[in-house]
Amino acid sequence: MEIASDGAAAVSDRGLRRGVNADAVALASAGAWTVGVVCDGVSMSARPERAAQVASEVGAASTAARLRAGVLPETALTDAAVRAARAVTALAGSIHDAPACTYVAGIAGPDGVRAYWVGNSPTRFAEYCARPAVTFSTK
Image (cartoon, rainbow, N blue to C red; front, side, top):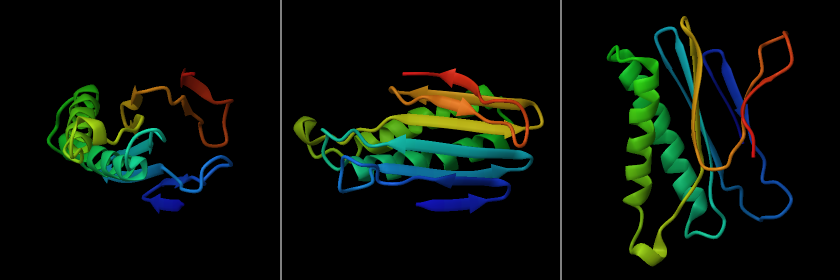
C-alpha cells in the first residue's frame, strides 16, 4: 500500500507471516498541520484489516476536524483516538467477534510534532534530510 497527501507519504506491505496486510494508513491535512494515522490489525481478532482501516480513517479525519476547529493538538489527538476506538467497537457483532488493532497518530505543523499511540506499535519521527530518527516509543 502506498499513499501520499500534501507533503506526506506512507508505505506498508503485507510482511512475511500473514497472507493479508492488516495495516492501514490514513493521511489528512488541516491548515498548516499534516496528520498521519497508522493502525495494525491484531491478527488473533476477527477482521483485523477492517479494524485497522476504520480506525485509521476515523482517526485521521477526526484529528484534522478538531485541529480545524482550533482545539489544542494534544486534545485533537486524544479525541480522535477515542472516536476511532468507538468506530472499531461498533464493528463487533458480539464480544466474541470483536475486531482489534493498534493505533498510532502523529501530527506535524507550525507548533512542532506530536504523537499518540495505543497498543504496542513503535512510533518514530524522522526529519527530512536531517538527523537520525527520534524514537517516541519502542516495543
